Image 1: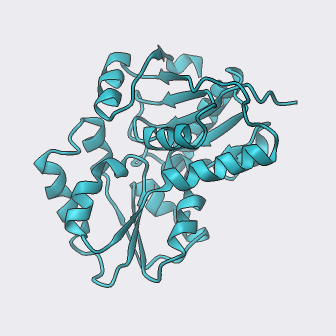
Image 2: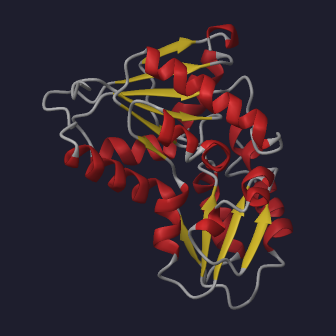
Length: 257
């Protein structure tokens, strides 16, 4: 039987999943979390889906060995590549970020999607919502990972990617958990378009499901342990620039996965 006092595992290719972690902590303040950023192999978006699927299974296996009670795949590319197989085969509940975002998007008539090449190419979102337009934006993740979300170059690149968006577009799914950090630039290019960020919708779904399964932690302290495969201090500096305080941090070698 799963232990309600066990932590929730959350993983992404880098810092993008911190948007989901932040929303989860707000929705579930008494839960403890393990956050895994695969910073040695970021970005995932240009890699074959089969490779991303392998990465996702490796990280999920690591989190299970660390004793998590649930896993949140806080990465659109990994969700596109590895769900629903992870959800079907693992011994704990597994949540992705695609379906919650799509559920919000279904409230609009004309919906667009921006994401990594892998996410857009997989057409995974089309399982959940009809899209009027989709565009891969491969430079957005490196911009965030390099800390350039407020740099003038972010606006230049956003214009380059988004200038061809249909004029009647009503909503745009930010189909990568890194992209919310670029909201300012994206909204400047598309000022009348609603931006759909999957973080809050995902957090709400996780909270509802854990409550239904009797897995809410009655006495957690909201602690987060961060694991990274790349340089820990670079990750700490970037996370704290993004407003996430990193107290417990451990480097995991790829051989440990």
